[in-house]
Figure 1 (cartoon, helix red, strand yellow):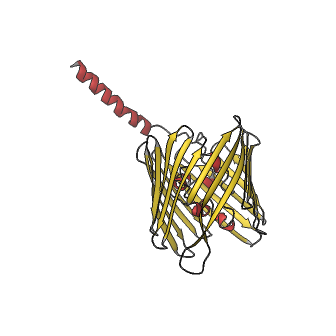
Figure 2: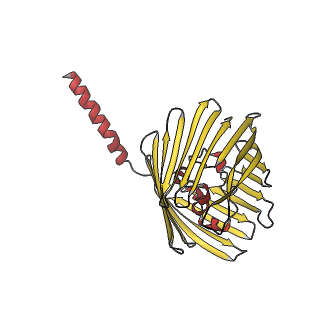
Figure 3: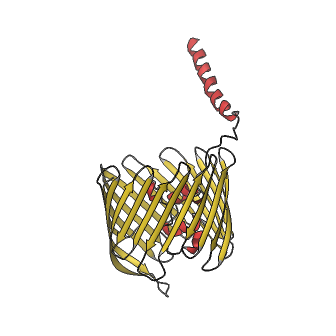
Length: 346
């Protein structure tokens, strides 16, 4: 009887805990601070969106920065990305930490690269590239620099001016005339909101704001002006997140409509889906992705409505040594990409 009473008491306690959470009152004067506006889709971006489509989602104004692929990601290199960085050919990365704040990196890649062609067939030429990087990471200051043999020079800076105000700067210099880009961000974080102001070359001005309305729901908006082509636009976004899922939506006057959903099935498995639609060109795409974490490796992949299937495997051979396999199949265009690589250093 004592055992039965103990079991009944434990069951009642377990039932009372969810009820207490459900009936807990929301303090609307102490809401959590939302994530930055340009990162509202970050879980889906890191799971299923390929690199060449990221600019469309991280902000509706980034259609203007066609060549600004690496430097507009707002120092996302600081975070551990879940998105597979698909590649073709061979890649070798070496990271050497000189001390707790300063590190150097070397990256070597060899493989075919697709070139523009008027025919429907995919035309590729073999290329190789070496990139040297230097990183400085401090709690209030982060500096990242990259120099590549193809002539690209990339720099990123993040500096915390105060507890609430941060400065971010991104720049990329290339050999092609009038193709170099630069942008400066001023980020301000309030108690339950975040806002950002942007200045870029080509007379570009932009601003965004995101506000937490409940502990799980946040809404935001953006506006931009590109002076060189004399174009402007506005956008709106919503994000709802819990411990197990994240759902986002975005619409902009540039024609963008984006919906994403990420579900955490368990501690090792996450599933994601997205829908992108351009109501000006009437084009739509849908993607489904997965992220599976094993003991010594991590497997990620996706398939989209165009029939493109990709997978990315990271195998941890030992401390500081990783083996990478990458594959992407596009049967419609008859484009098949396979790559392998090694990463040395943490």
